Length: 465
Image 1 (cartoon, rainbow, N blue to C red):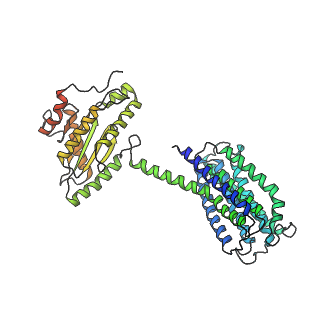
Image 2 (tube, one colour):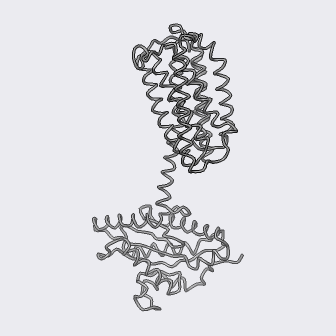
């Protein structure tokens, strides 16, 4: 399943849950549940943490990519953070029992609407058709970010200051716990704006699989929050509490998506650092590190350990005759043959090009010879569709000796034995370095592995087209 499909399903699931929860609570939204002094401070503290992390990560994404839309999302979360700060000062019991700094309680609903309507509108504006005019060159990114953050901070602080200064001239939106006036005055403006932002954002992020796709979900959750708040009619009602809970969800969805994306990127980077991207076998660096660990284990337990190293014969002819795509398919087929032949506890690796290695813990030289022979036979017997025939390989084997100080020593001896197998005519197995014995001679073990190949016509390396 592609990342896009998974993201589409996840966003659809979360959106459905938010809408379903809203529809279930709406008929019971005005049910009074009583005040809880710690609820609002806990909600605001949680949202503040989420907003701070979102601003930081989105700003970093903008600096890395120069994408103006990331800058727009950064400013939306900054607005949310600053307006929420003003709301915390105005809401009784959050900072103090009475709003500090000459802020009156009647300011809280205005700041709430500015927060809950302004954030989704800015988020939608970040994905409006005019928001992307091409990337910003690297040297201009930091100054533009600083200027935009300063401008948005000034706009948010001026909004809070204006609400405080004109508090006594503004209509009172909440009488006691009754929020009906707030719904009548602000809902006709706030709801259409948020709905329009949702439509714009949903259209813009269609086809995208990154965390930004969750922007439309955040706007939808904000819309559900406002609907519950307006329909509940009272503070501390079921709808009011559910709306505050959705506030947390709206601030969290994009952040969680970003963190999940970073986790996937980290996992992919770790995999690419340890495994060959073409064959999914361990790469050279990982093979040497793992071989060193297996050697340490073998010495500690006093058990044998051997290495089988092989190189495909005349692999260059495949690339020259059929192209590199066919060569890649050959390498993948060889890797699958290796995985099907060796044990799960064995370490299989592609060291580079057409060279492979298998580290065999708890295996002596005779065991390594049997594994090499199975691999040699399986390779000769398997027809690879990309070239219409099989391939052969030359094998070198070596067993861990007391004087093998490092993994490099053991693998080097296997590598030298492999070159001896090539010098003896390819499609063979050798356990001796290239200079022992004299060139052209075979040991008894080499003859045993090579005779079956000599007794029958060799499978052609490259078949007819």
